[in-house]
Length: 126
Length: 143
Image (cartoon, rainbow over all chains, first blue to last red):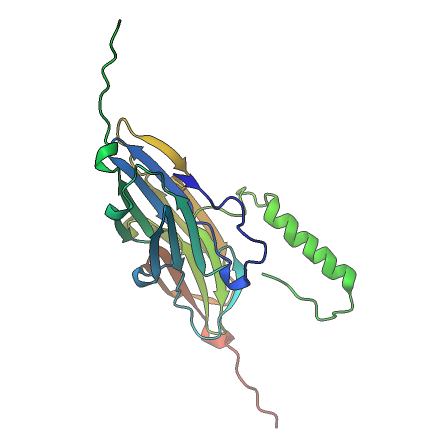
């Protein structure tokens, strides 16, 4: 699993395409990979998870209840969108991804395919 | 955040402002509390009737959040637990914030400390502070 967001894909990405890179934690154990992503301000129905070929895309739109006519005077979250992509490696089973989303934290569990489960290999001393 | 000069011919001042903005995003600010940006990230906005503060604080139990207003200073504090890494597991990426945090916002003088509402939704703490009524704009009739 590698992060493909480090280099912008194309320089002519439109302004609407601009998005913030959400911070993530990725933990791997014998059964698979768990990914946690911080997506504060994204309601459940504005979160989109997408796997195409071996690329996992997390896309979320920020919705805040701002009163009418509000002017921002200080901004640290300057774009209303998060996006991040990861390349999944072959042994991960993208069809069995489980997701939960609570308080702006996305938890993804990507199990390893059956054939990729660890097996102990006997080392023979000759 | 972006201050625009009313006198657009002053190009040098505009350039200076731009340089200041760039510097601020790159260098740590002169704040005594160190970081200019930290956890949670803050957006602050205002209307003629209220001041709105948005703290982007995902993954918290709202009951553990400590929001205080004292002498016009709003403090948001709490602690975020590190997500547990089970034994025999490897952490490949660890970017999310964990630990104790405290952020402080100095509010304008015309706020009413008795009418403050805080809500936590989708990982965002929204604090809304009303301005005092006598300071709200009103039309003055000319006699």
